[in-house]
Length: 266
Image (cartoon, rainbow, N blue to C red; front, side, top):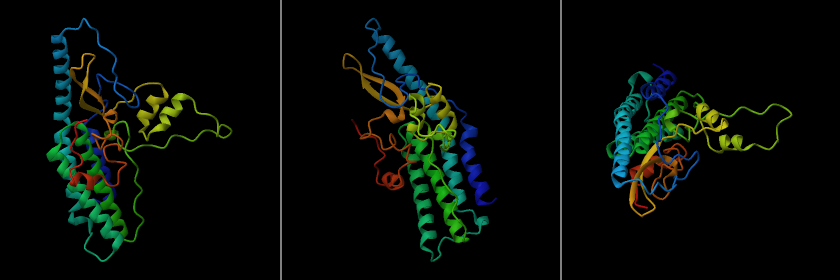
């Protein structure tokens, strides 16, 4: 299998195993922030406990569904890096080749570390993103080794990196360029998005976002466990919130190896 077909198979594995959409039952805000509307005062404490049990049960179901597939995805990236049939010897005296290859190895090692230490769904998704980067950098190293142009790469969908790579929005027809964007168009253009999420935003709908588990305070100051869009987590507590789980951060593998992915208390 050539590097292009191997890379395509690797990218398609998780989308086949994890059909979308995923749901975020609470804290739903299209582009950041936690929904802090006050709950009814008539709600009993037992109802609160039941709601939290339901939130944690859904989170655990998603985690159990994603963890083994993410592990397989990372393993397949490792197999790609060591496939003897690709005819690539990385220990050559070519600076760009070695740089891309070492970058691939670091991304793969970071993905494995995330699998071992994952605390929440974004950690597992970041493992997939970095495994994808390892495959991309390996493909670039091999292309340079063969005297070819490295294949182009694209960032992942910001709203849910498991959706795959972001797509370019269509260009406006001639004569309409330079016009002012309406609110929905501005929302769709704000972040890199896959086609499905972009169309949802254009329709005024919420995209299928990646959820994360967090704790907020209710109106009485009591801790409440909720699921929120992963990008709504405070940036100082999560390195994934503003980077599409590492897709937009070139230093993500190094940060993981330094342990910066471990969530800090707000």
